[in-house]
Image 1 (cartoon, rainbow, N blue to C red):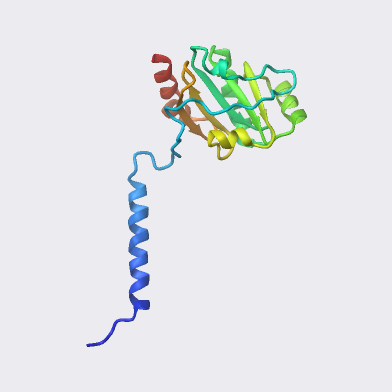
Image 2: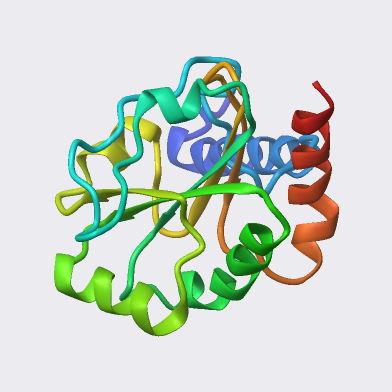
Length: 179
């Protein structure tokens, strides 16, 4: 009886394993969304510094009894600039929007808000990205919906633009406000 070389069997076995892994990933409930370990947990620590001339976002702000939207952004980030008009709309409609600027320069962040408008009732400044790491932020922009008790209710990765607002973000915001 002839022996079969492992080098002939190994590639098809590896291929089948990878194909199975990819196939199972395609049938997840929401394959494009990154899970957040913080949903259902108290909001992580906030930066201890604000953007120049702006109020500092504090844990008391997140535990005020009102739903708060926390947006991680940077002045150098094109998707952040794309979603900025929507954040201004949310602010104008009376939603509590807070902003945490990260991996940016204080002067550039201040100038950006002066030039393009400031939708944030309070801010955090995180130049090294340490708070962003604590929150599990992978890249700007990312937006969190925080319940009135300071619990993270929803995480949205990417800019709040287009149909994603109506299909994902607004339903999560409406659900948070209904609680």
